[in-house]
Image 1 (cartoon, rainbow, N blue to C red):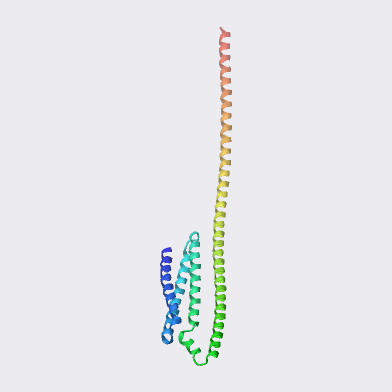
Image 2 (image 1 turned 90 degrees about the horizontal axis):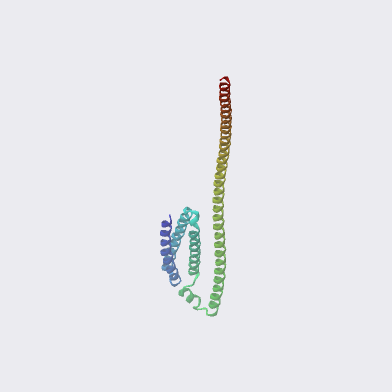
Length: 224
């Protein structure tokens, strides 16, 4: 299971490296070339998201005692994915040299003021976008923690249920052992009582035999 996860990790690393390189080229392109590059990056970002989904499914199949390390790596990859998407948005909004030249061409100060205003609006938009992405990542991390906590709680409840069953079985065995000890004690008591009775009987018989022998000897001597 972990080998599949590591294979997806390698694919994700190669794919994100390619995306990073292409994102850096987007602001430098114009026209159809830029559109084609944007379409390629969007396609690769979708592939990266699918890889993340596959990796997350693999993490859910990993035993709980080993899952923590992989969950931490998943959070790191999701943060990396969020950063790539933010960089891609910036690259699409960024102005190419051709657009700058058009804005600064004939109108001089008005075009420059318009460019400054557009830059301010773009910076404000990027700031809001980053805040939304950070909030989204925090919510996603909180949701992931809640899911992991729920899974741990369910596992603890299952373990407690198993322990309870073991304790109940142990109590039943103790009751059976106690009952067997009671039976054994009664049997031993009965055997001891019979042994004592037999010894008393043997002593009585011995006394009778001795008494009879002595009486026989006495009468035999007296008759002579």
